[in-house]
Length: 319
Image (cartoon, rainbow, N blue to C red; front, top):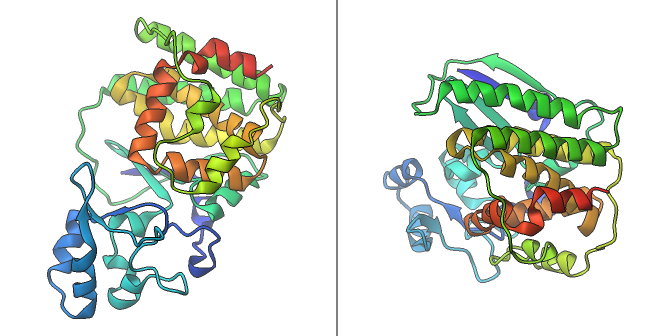
């Protein structure tokens, strides 16, 4: 399998107990089948603790029930993981072993990156001075089984390269690049199907009031938004757009909705524009939205159907 990662991917290092916003608090962690099978083979206090906090969420997934203050039940007073200490990091849940990395498989190619939801990863991408580019290597992992349309996948692969070039064209200001990106996405979408954008929807800023709240600090940022702010012509905003294109664009191979993936890159730049021009703000948004099934499904629906997230309305915000 070919592995594609951002060029800075291997530079990421978790700072564990020193993290200012631990990934072990705020959200529930799924207990994957492989980990659950291993826990049945162990005994003692750690097995008893594991069994005592297993629960089901609203989607019938097995999860570890959080404490009253929304901390993982294994997160100790030093902000370190008692499960990791007791049985080794390799036996913690898959989410814990991989976070903040995300994995997208496309047959013979695997793409992996790091998410803004981790404050350390957010700082890395926010402060990245060199071009946001990628490296590839071959490994021994066999191709994943899939039913994707290979021809459409390669079409999207080439289209994403064009999208990258639009975003990284420093001859234009970032706002003009994003306008061009929207036009490019709309052109592709119109060639694919009779795409109808929504005719109604909640206010643009209401989009960011997620139904599932992970951190009240994000709620306050939405309340105090600078609605008159303008987009800065910054490398940080270029990096944000590149992140969203890398992470989501090729997923259109499953739903043929290219335009929503383009919109996600544009709205991603608008997040620090309106709510705070720093890496902490985009980190909070990501943790609230990208790592909540409820919030993310709602957000995808808004991108597709909300008139206030239409190409026309987004262009108005880029002026």
